[in-house]
Length: 263
Image (cartoon, rainbow, N blue to C red; front, side, top):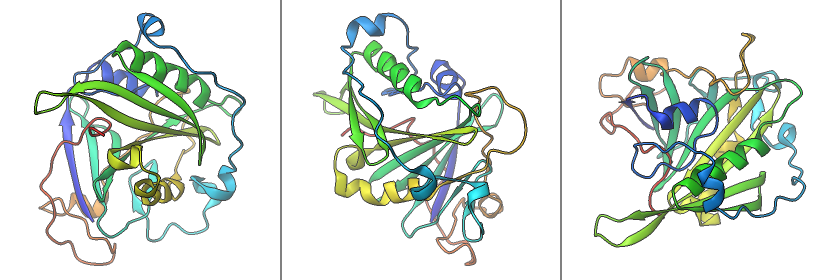
């Protein structure tokens, strides 16, 4: 399993990410959501949330896991290794803290961010609305779906391809409210629009374990991520699929996309 990380300057998209409200950022420059987005976007109706049994199907809280052996330890998140899986961490340049992890597998991606939440308030419904505002401010549109994890958001933002033609950047947003935490996943590439291509990354999302910790944090504060110890000690930034195996050659360190690829 290859591993890499990249640094980025703090900007409006980073601030949105930290509050749990980040949406599609096609050019990496960031775009703050404001009231104008509501006028540009006809938000679809959002009926009662589809019931999804998180405690049975995952993602899980650390207290719900008997043994953490075999997981890749990213601090607030534990993920299961898989052959061909590449991990990329987004590091904020001004503070050197990790603000997101992206899992790349078979040409698709899953970006993960975990946030603090209160014991009584769920965040996903409000965050869906903020995603809609941000996407609308960029001239895009969203669709609320009844997906495998309950309510999901499919976002499309217009972009110009490298060949100069017009296209769309597509992202599928997943959200799970857990005990005192909220986990956001963003599927990109083929996984955003193809259910078969999404299956392995959906399995990885279900298998995530969130380590909330006991430190008091305001709701929507990012939970602290960190570089895995094995990857930090590897001079080429590579991390093997088998955690017990010696590190082998992998991809060079690189900055990953903020959210997704052109679909």
